[in-house]
Image 1: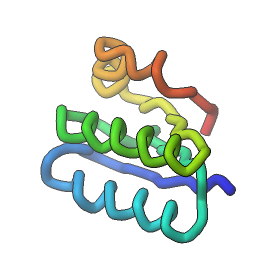
Image 2: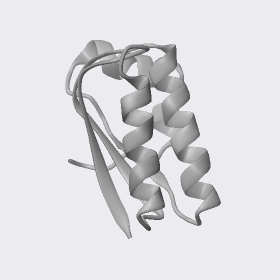
Image 3: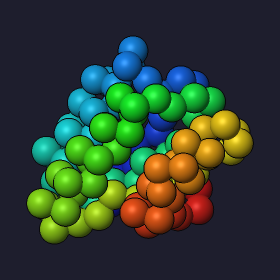
Length: 94
């Protein structure tokens, strides 16, 4: 089963725990895979990147995959490209 977690606005140290908790909740509810929808994200920092890595690890441990819907804003997209997360994670259309 695949669930979607939507992140909006800034994805940073201030809301990383909320996003991680939501990802953990859907995995605990039985999802093996998670699509992390970043379309409406305006900014991402290293705390956000750590949440994405944790999600990828947790999904793989559950026998699934963590996928991303890329941000629409170029600034947020650039972070994913510079870190090559757009190559590590499967990218899906939202």
